[in-house]
Amino acid sequence: MSRTRRKFSPRFKADLCVELLKGEKDLNSLASENSLLPNLLRNWKKDFLEKCPKAFDDTSENYWKEKYLAAHREKEDYAKKVGQPAMQVDWLKKNLRRSLDQDTRTNLLQSLSKSRSRASGKKWERTISVRTAAGLLSLNRTGIYYKHRDNKPAEEELACKALLDRVHTDNPSWGARQLSKQLRMQGFKAGRFRTMRFMREMGIDAIYPRMNLSKRQKKAQILPYLLKNVDIRRPNQAWSIDITYIPIRHGFLYLTALIDWYSRCIVGWEADDTLDTRMVIQAVRKAFRIARPEILNSDQGCQFTSNEYKAFLRENHVRQSMDGKSRWADNIMIERWFRSFKYEEAYLTQYNNIREARQAIRSYVKKYNFERCHSAIGGVPPAQAYFPAMLLDAARATA
Image (cartoon, rainbow, N blue to C red; front, side, top):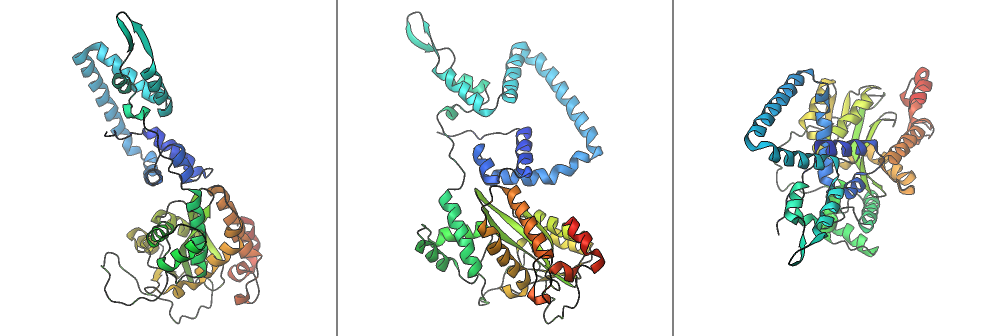
């Protein structure tokens, strides 16, 4: 039996996006509560953020006025053609759809399908057919028989991903075969292909030199590594940026962070449940409020090879550098900080939602920058080596 594709109103989509941006619920939990696929909700959020600036575009006012007048004329023509009864039925269908949520309409359809009245000469008969009732309520009649599957990731899957993140952090050169064996030793059902799928979803990859047997397709321009044998002598001479995976109670999120090579100071960060270029640019934009580096180094991930990211750096007159292929050591500064953060904070705490995770990251970054002494910079906190003495107190107050 074929199923009719579900339709969602713009208001419904917008309300879910706003609730998701509040950070009180993670993406997977919100998708499960509304019987949605997480990727669908993730795409709605992306479209919502891209179209927000149009709300302040005055040029669109005439467009909506013309659209309203056209709809009004169409309504008048329709009323003349089909008459008042058909118009009343359409009015009823639209208002039922707007005023009642889907669960309420589904419950009403189920009650109507079961209700029967006595009729002369017949045992029982329905007062209205299920097909007719479903049409009035704008529902697929199979909805009263079909129960939506819970799309929330299983606890076993989340625990498996959390262990996978730890093992990969300790052994970044291990591939899917070795990682799947390690997971099975801990009691998880994880074959090679399931482990590979988890790695793709988490945005991690094995780090080791590979034989250059084939050339990559030149879909994106790979820029050279600019920091080879460079003597770093001052703050903002070179920064590094990278992305890592952070587990939370009902899912996971991604953390983008930027570090200054000279002082080891974290100059900017951003956390989100969607891995895209927008999150990366938002983290860089926050860091640029403090200063701008001469060189910003990254790996060859798709977020850093995108035209949008490259154009943003060019607009701010920052030279872009990229690691060599499979050269994880080229970005060692930020990799070491991610390891410290995970073992000193993320692995010791289970965050209930994105808001809690962001608060914890903010507290850790402040403590790391202003309190924790770093042996590589003479045993002083990174902020003391990064900020001039006269600005240190102001930076601590705004961190």
